[in-house]
Image (tube, rainbow, N blue to C red; front, side, top):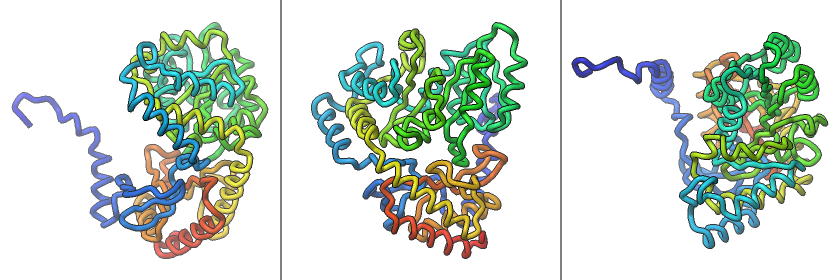
Length: 404
């Protein structure tokens, strides 16, 4: 360190550096630096030179290679160029951005839709704009990082409650001072364990105390609910939700984020939401693919049914093999396999990769209760044979590592 210099700003990361070094020193392939050399389809890619089944991409409805989606993006790229080079409030609103928001309004049956450049920005922007100093945010302790960051940016009072605990949530709301602004934030599907929220009961409690409600449906849009609108639709309470946040990087199959709402004053957010105002808009090719995909998802009943079959088959099969899972029954397209510890989780991840299967390795502190998880996310395009092959891979790898 130079004379007179302050402390090393990297020292705060020494714990993570140590964890990563220990993993790599054990001989395990770096699970956080995988390169896909070629993507063959929504369910397969070439990884480390071999044909690999993809079971960790969140490509739930398999729209990334849909011919209509690709054609729409190709046409927009040729007609409008590679990017907008501007914010939505300046030169960054093209016809495609309006058409994408039209598709979202139609998909959700809501009055307003606002597209962000990422799903992370959607949460960051809406939450920080709606709840500021003097307001209160009541949220599930297992909320996504983008939700927590939105709370921090807005500088509201943050009041977390135990995961999916309705009574704990009500106790927090009861203690908030009379007349204060209140926002309750929930997720339809929680991405770590793949479990769903009891939205019907929770939203009833939120409304009892005069709170607005934001539901993040990132991991349920497209396949949960009669029309694929998410858990709120499935539980019959979508009309009571003030803001639905979602992403294009899961079921829609591209990149971007959005918020839909029926609030009559919603459109003012386009002028006061800083992560929207001060960010370049999505490229025309991206919004074209998103709009086309969203409109096709409106008629995706067959795909939704196939995805549910795949999820149930994998969930049941892994339980029968003796693995510990994040949920006792199939609740979503996420199947979380609980590992004994990070070292054996990484060994299991590598054993599966050698078998020709890619899954997500999730580790503390991002996981609930400091668990190490292998997160599997099913796709509607996985064939029945692929799911059976996946089960065989898990069984062989689990026995080799000593997990089962």
